[in-house]
Image (cartoon, rainbow, N blue to C red; front, top):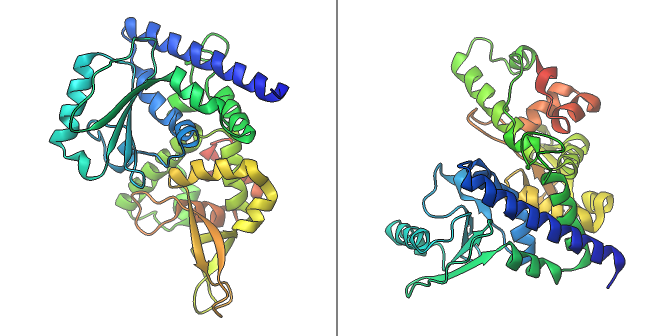
Amino acid sequence: MDIRRENALKALAERFATFSNVVTIQNKAGFNDINKSAERLFIDVLNIAYNLRLRDMNAIQDNYPAIDLGDYASRTCIQVTSESTNQKFRNTVAKFKEKQLDRDFDKLIFLIISNKDLCSLTDRDINTRVINLNDLYKAISVLHDRDIFYIESYLAENLVSRVEQSDSILPSGLMATYSAPTPDAFISFLGLEDEPECREQLLNDLKSLAQILSNLTKHQREYLFYVVGQGQFARNLYGSLDENNIVMPTSQVDQAFGDYGYQIFQVLKAQDLLFVNDEYDPHGDDRYIRVLEPYFRGELDDTNLFCALKSFCNGDNNKLRRIILDCDFSHLQ
């Protein structure tokens, strides 16, 4: 076995073992907040390991019933939980049936993130499977080298020891709250001084974006910064700039980041931060090219926040860098 591959797999085994131990101990002590954070933590790991395109179902609907992650294309859904009791299994399956989730999903997987024994129940109506981090590790261990290296790097950054670094074994971003002075300059730039409702929507959107960015890894934020900062505003059918849409040719991104960038792209795409447009016509002459479009829209109607931030920074990439890479929104005040 290649030494680098072997070392990465050993590191992953240690991280999974430590994580499941911590979850088990914290849950016994009555601390369950880590269970919720784990849902987003494992999205891209599961996507790579099982060739899925899972999305956070709570991002689609608050308190989505029965399941945490879903892939509509493969009709696979996952519940991430530390509980593996028969009653937990029955309750989830009952809720799955009650909400008629079988209209969208054929397979229900339970990912157990603790050290508890796995439930062995099945259901005659639903294709179910119960796995733990050992099973996930086995799936990762047979992947291509670049996938293993990416997952190990991702978890190295996101599974940080509570004792060594912070008040959580997860990255500080997962526990972060948005707090910054009112972004008066940005509000003025968007012309919202006299529109209190729109101003409140903008503040909510900035809070959401700050939380999302802080939950990304450094490499994911760097990739996003590159696309937003180096991308160009799109041109419409009449040749005018559309300052609510940024585009960057996929070939440019591929050249800049190579194979490693592909996995990052998949994560950002799954979180609805990047979109692919296969029919961008930059010259209006039907010579289409494939482009990436960074995209964040929240409560404020018809506002792509990435575009608004790029316009506000007006070519000052150092300011944009601090916003996206450092999650520092103080430059908007």
